[in-house]
Structures are given as structure tokens and as C-alpha cells.
Length: 218
Image (tube, rainbow, N blue to C red):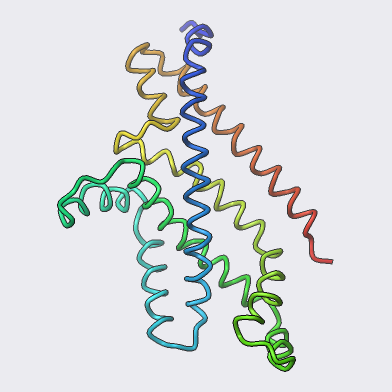
């Protein structure tokens, strides 16, 4: 078998455009996931039982079901309920954000629980409310400790975002499929796709390492 470098060179602009879409999906999904996960993680520690149970059900359901099934639910099932088609981009971001939020919730929960309980008591003794203590004392310390797992979640979502190709959304993996359908160069294109993913994940890993060193707890 002859390795065709020309087909990679010709297809590279299309693949890189797909990689940009992949980064956009990942950034938006993890961004929304951070918001969802932060509130869900705090809710998991709430003294109000219904809130705690609701957050636990959300986390357990999302972590216990495949992302692919969640994408299908949002893209194919929800339109049957609302009577309107869901845009593939909206479906992709929604499914990935909800999925990421469940994992981020556990990251935040463990990060908050790693902070000594005396920190909360000290904040309350100074006259700060629970919210103020959480915002100004607990969360800044917890954030430094959760940088590595948050980086891992970003990398995991970057790779898992390839699943949105099943609903026809043209990110990197889908672009690769389209190129292969036209050129029949499966080995060359999939190798190029794999290398692009590797390059993206490597870049994120180095960025996370930098943040970890900068905010290392001394």
C-alpha cells in the first residue's frame, strides 16, 4: 500500500476547519458545564434534602448513561415532545454541556470537601454569610485543587465531542468521514485526524500543567 501524502495536504484545510468546530464545541460545552457543575456540586453538599437528592439524581443519571444516548435523546426524542426540530449545533452543545456538568459537579464537590471545615467556621465567625464564605474563602482554595481534573475533563470532552458526528454535525471526525467518502483514503485521513486530535490534547495538557504550576498550593 502506497501512503498518499498529497491527499492529506489537499484535505488538511477541511480537516482543520473541522478541528476549529471541535474546539468551539468543547469550549462552549465545558464552559456551560462549569456553570452547571458548580451549582450541582454545591447542591450535592446542601443541607436541604430535596436539593441534595435532585442534584444526586442528575449526576447519577448522566454519569450512568452514555453520551451517545444523551445526544440521541436531545436530537431525536425532544423534538417529538416539543413538536419542533432541534438544530444540530444546539443539540450538540446541550448534550455535551449537560454531560460535562455532571462530571464537573463531582469535581467541584470533591474540591470543596477537600478544604478544611474550619475555613467555613472561620468565615462565619467573621460575620460572613454562607454564600460569602463559599465565594471568597472556600471556592478560591478549591479551584486551585481542581485544576488538574478540570483539565482532564476538557480533554475528555474534546475527544468525546466526536460523537456529535452521528447527528450530522460537521466537526473534525465528520469532516474526516466526508473526505474518506470522496477520496477512499481511509488510512491517510484517519491518521491525519488522529494527529490533529493529539495535537489539540497535547496543547491543552501543557496549558493545564502551566496553570497547575502557577496556582500550586504551597
